[in-house]
Length: 298
Image (tube, rainbow, N blue to C red; front, side, top):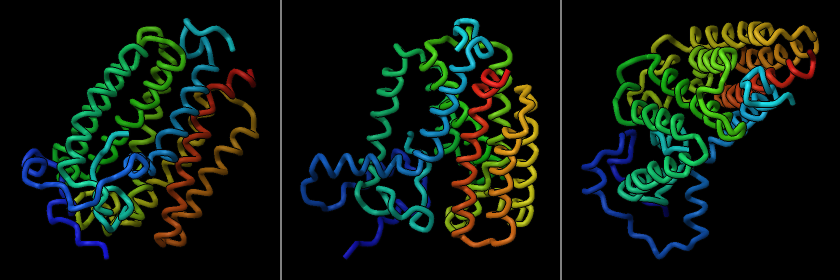
């Protein structure tokens, strides 16, 4: 039978005191497969949120060629550890790791990631990502300010987009065009104004953690309406920014937006909210394709 989670792991941020005072759980020796699966659990929810959409962003931006950079020819951190209520399969709630083990894993992997990023040209976005992670995890902002989680997610996701583009395109930040920087800023604004779709299914757990997310502070009705208005607005503005005149493209983007609204507005169930979040990730991937589509359709 699974033992109860140590008190320090419930809805709390990892601190130095936790790392020194909390020892490893009593567990038998662990195999390589065990540790690999544990690493997978840390990043499982980032596949649809970060890896696939941001890879799409980078590929599309690179295919856009000179629109993004004159140098181009024509052509996860650990984060805030959530409670059992939201994501019980994560390594700490499921007791695959102790708090001290998770803490030191983070301490080790942050500099390792930066060292790997340096020769690839991705050091700058990696450092920005570390700052965003510290704001999210260690500053306590999420318990004091309503939009703090949206703000941190906006910075973090934008760092992934920017970094992936730099690495895939073999570019430096100075080689990006003004249009590319504007697009990066637009995508950051999209995340800032709509990412609280994710929080709709996590209200119970976030409230237990003391987080001040948009649905908790503004109320679920206001959170749903603002997110719906945001996805519709950006679905119209983004194709316009890329000077796309194809009704098919507008239709595809708007279909994604309407699907989110349908899943999010009338039903108001945890299952529907989780579907809305997955649809949001897919909708973002469609938006990320627009730079490449603009080149093809021009």
